[in-house]
Length: 161
Image 1 (cartoon, rainbow, N blue to C red):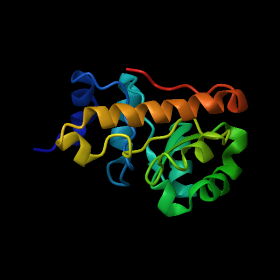
Image 2: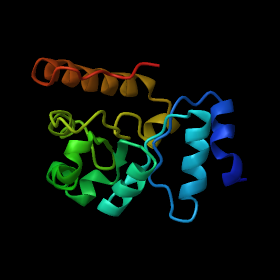
Image 3: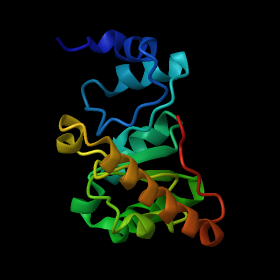
Image 4: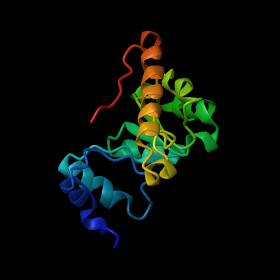
């Protein structure tokens, strides 16, 4: 049973969720969900794909945005193109969708990228099969790529739970 929009963030916060990066915040529900998250101080980065999406988030004072689906939209080239008009406002992105081990460093080297996300680390198949060592190894590879980039990037940090 879906969570009613009127209590979406209240409910997920009560389950211990610390932040959310939804693929988008639909036009109809956007105002209600955004206001609720901001009211309770729940950190989230709504998904964006267009300048209109970015400007909608900026109207609420949201400057950290999930770019989804980053890969299908054109990757780093698209990211930098869509970000350019908002650079002076300090907008930062969390690209997801098509980000993987082979291209994660390309994204992380961009100054407008705060973090990345990708399901390659823990695929549905690996989770379903209980391949925890495989997932752990993918995490280690990703962490080592981040470590290699630190001297070039400065403040890259892995989120640790």
